[in-house]
Length: 108
Length: 112
Image (tube, rainbow over all chains, first blue to last red; front, side, top):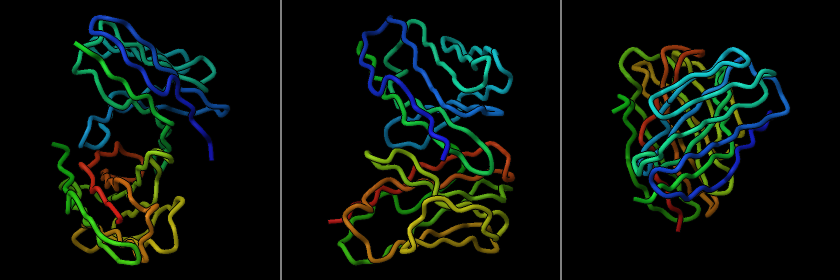
């Protein structure tokens, strides 16, 4: 099993703050996905990164794939309460292998 | 709304019992996946069916089984239930094995 370790495990911040979530592995991946899961719902795909060094932006969210394709980060600028949820990175082949998750709480 | 429907939303039962969870995939999707989400193990892949055939298996217990029917809906059967089986069970579907997976809202199983 190729483990995907995420850090931090929990993050509790005030509205307007910036934050970064990390996803690390000892293995090289052809691609990496980021999901957000809100309470009572299933995970929803946010982005797929494929190329080493790639940066993708989704409004206030910035995703980066490491040059060696072993790690990735998710940066949120000016967090809002609506960003609250569980953030999961995942490796996709014929199934999804999920990371350990980062639970984010943004207080108004 | 992902288009993936899971029933029931909640299930409460006792140890030793057997339950069946149902999943209707998005229209046109041939692949169905089952995942288990618990506090200590996170979100873990159980099994993948493609067009009625088993495609891949994860850490699925022998007490658990699944199938995909000709109309492409899928059922996950859990038997001889134990307290540790309490978890959220998610179904996802995709057009094919390498396509984006869309998740249902899950079935919350509580074993008393």
